[in-house]
Length: 290
Image (cartoon, rainbow, N blue to C red; front, top):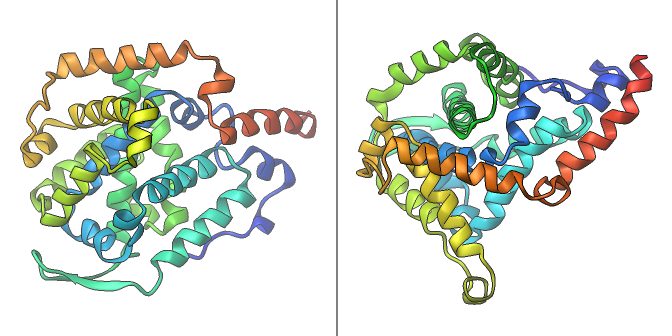
């Protein structure tokens, strides 16, 4: 596994623009409302790899004791890697690599001995995320050409390498991403750990006052339903949720409606502080490149 780059490897302008920058497809997809649905879809897909899921079950204690905090940290990691400065992104990468280091176990259903930072497990998590975010963005109506889709997959190679994937193994086009899933599908299954994780994702525990006094439960139910309904057919079949109450056509229509409704909310409200800060920051970088 290659070492994490140092901020000394980059210029001041590169640091300000981050690893992707405002002209990237990554910024376009990751700042869109469909991102939240794609994130849930990614979690459901990631749970289908018995060994990767065992690593979460064995070593991510927050998943069961403080699940909301874990989901928040995951979202913050992706947002910082996408929109933060390179220095901020590298700090997050080092934190995640540190959490993975020296953790090993044996997955019972396959008998495989593994390390949490095995490159193939990191690649599975990465590819589920990229496929989910790209798929939901396209189905939601984000204007993306086939060339944009390939460019997004290519851009995200840097995220895979930073977390510890072998660069030569990372898909660089949408077709290569599809081929990866075709090759790995025979090794996927819904283990007890995956079943437990999917139940949490689809119906997470919430304090009573949150359910009664806030719209958190119906809001999450909408996102979770769309995330499950937009899974590929083979993944829904593994979960025993072939349609999750929605046909593919209805799921796409629902996703588009959700996106349009969210886009009607002012950007200063719907966009995260990390995204807003990035837009403000890159404006100060323009004189550096003039």
